[in-house]
Length: 115
Image 1 (cartoon, helix red, strand yellow):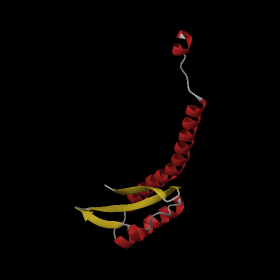
Image 2 (cartoon, one colour):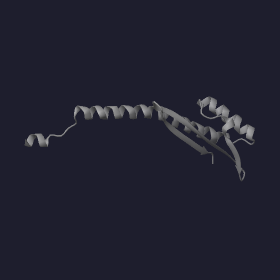
Image 3 (cartoon, rainbow, N blue to C red):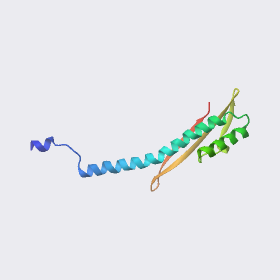
Image 4 (cartoon, rainbow, N blue to C red):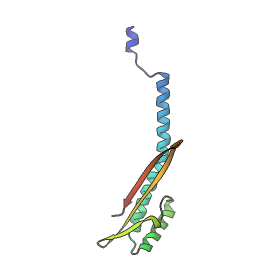
C-alpha cells in the first residue's frame, strides 16, 4: 500500500494528452513564426522607404524592398506616408489569418512605423 502511494508518474492517457498538446503548439508556432519574420522585413522596408522625398518615391522604394524580401502581405499602396518636422514617417498596419482547424482562425495584427 505504501509503495503505491509513493509512486508518481504520467499515465498513458496523460502522455497522449501532453503529446497532442505539444504537437498542436508546434504546428501553430510553425505557422506564426513566418508571419513574424515577414513583419520584421516590412519594418525594415518601411525604414528604408522613409528615406524618400515624395510619397511616390517612398512607395516605389518600399515595393522594391518588398520584392527582394518576398513581402506579400502589404504593398506600397497600403502605406501611410506623413511628415513630422523634416522627417518622412512611413506607417503600416495589416493582419494575417492563420487557419487552425474547422472554423477557428488565429488573427495576427501587425502595425508599425519608421521613426
